[in-house]
Amino acid sequence: VDHPLRERDLIAWIRDRAPATGDDCAVLPCDPWGDLLVTVDSVIDGVHAHWAEDGPGAFGYKAVARGLSDIAAMGGQPLWAVVAATLPKGSGDEQARALFVGAESAGCELVGGDTSVGPVASVTATVLGRVNHGAAILRSGARVGDRIIVSGCLGGSYESGHHLRFRPRVEEARLLREHCAVTAMIDISDGLAVDLHHILEASGVGARVFSERIPLRTDSLDAALHEGEDYELLACVAAGATIPAPFVEIGEIVKDGALLVHPDGSEEPLEPRGYEHRG
Amino acid sequence: VDHPLRERDLIAWIRDRAPATGDDCAVLPCDPWGDLLVTVDSVIDGVHAHWAEDGPGAFGYKAVARGLSDIAAMGGQPLWAVVAATLPKGSGDEQARALFVGAESAGCELVGGDTSVGPVASVTATVLGRVNHGAAILRSGARVGDRIIVSGCLGGSYESGHHLRFRPRVEEARLLREHCAVTAMIDISDGLAVDLHHILEASGVGARVFSERIPLRTDSLDAALHEGEDYELLACVAAGATIPAPFVEIGEIVKDGALLVHPDGSEEPLEPRGYEHRG
Image 1 (cartoon, each protein chain N blue to C red):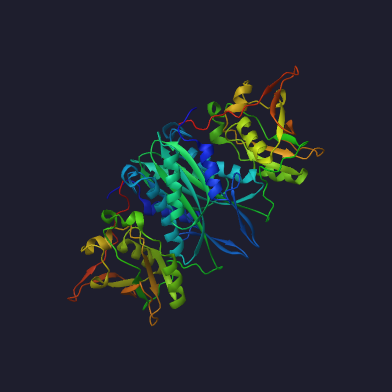
Image 2: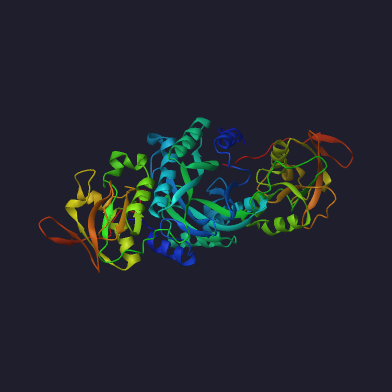
């Protein structure tokens, strides 16, 4: 999907101006309490979900769940969420309540809400979490020899409705840290290919990914690589550790390049191509 | 302006479910660092500003400035802002950058940004601040005999463009706390009448406001009472202290009722009527 906003350039520009803009979350030192994690995500009618079909509850749920997935990807503990909702004209209290009940059901304490009436439905959730000072898992820590692992099935998230119902991998991230030295982590929102490249670029390394090891939701490898909206965790862990379920190993970090390796031994470049938007 | 969403009921309902939803901000204890203040505000095209005329920078500025005004009203120190922007289809990098430059110019460190492309332009800013533990100024502390003060001119904010350019009263709030025992504070977004009633209800008290003392931006007392979007501070302070400029005294807290007192001694009820929305 081609769109006029070169989002990656823009994100780089924002990051230049705002060094605390970390990876999936901003990391804000609040000594001696710990580091505060902050992430913001929007769900817009016609872009990330459909108000008429999916309903207000799905909007509230998805907005908060996306934020929880970001906190999980930093290895953090989610604490609080605030939700700003824009309801379409003609909405009543019932829709507003359904939206906030949906937001609550994502499993994070709701501590604030703002509602407006506007031309298009949207929900923006800010999710706050905590990690010990300096303990946030960044994208930049992957090292040659690390195993590349993923927490669940990829692809077909839109058509299956997974993108509205996924359970953020907060517990899985906590468990993973207990078992492994996690060197880099991200949640897969733009697709395995694009999000893996985020890690590779930030870490200055390459990767080999074995196509037959990628867990598929549908029978399409292409969907698993490029569709996105999976909200599974993609992590790099030091070799040698036992990888806890549901994580599965799909590849390894190498010096440079990004290759997809097929069962017959053939290789092809793993291009960072994805869907930045559906709008 | 009549609108179908009974926002006050909804806010009460959210507050029931989310006790940390404080006044202008959520107050979240992060011992021993302090109390974290969190507020979220949206600026939506056609509701709070006009994209085509006012431009992207005004959207970014207003969204963050509204949050800073909320932090000021709690007596807090603003620290960080994250901004989620939805740009209309056809927008380019230039508009996105103008939006974030506008957001930065409100005077708070920008630590995160998210951009989407959608059918209607909007910006949601989450602003984070800090107060010492237990030191947030609430709406509920006004006591009989307190003076009611306001930080600047009211009314005509929309027609004058003040609502896009106001300087959040962060420094004034700090100064006020140094000089006075501030018992309750709010920023005037819904209009003096409505926002004063928020204090009166939360504190269980009444008020007498002297009409000729209200600082007017235009020559309309009605606009000053009911239009809103002034983003001045409305505070109650214990009697006897010297009130620092630019604050002016406009009335006093009494046992019950809410009266507007005119120079000829006549009185009329001060009704909590305002503009909840412009959409």
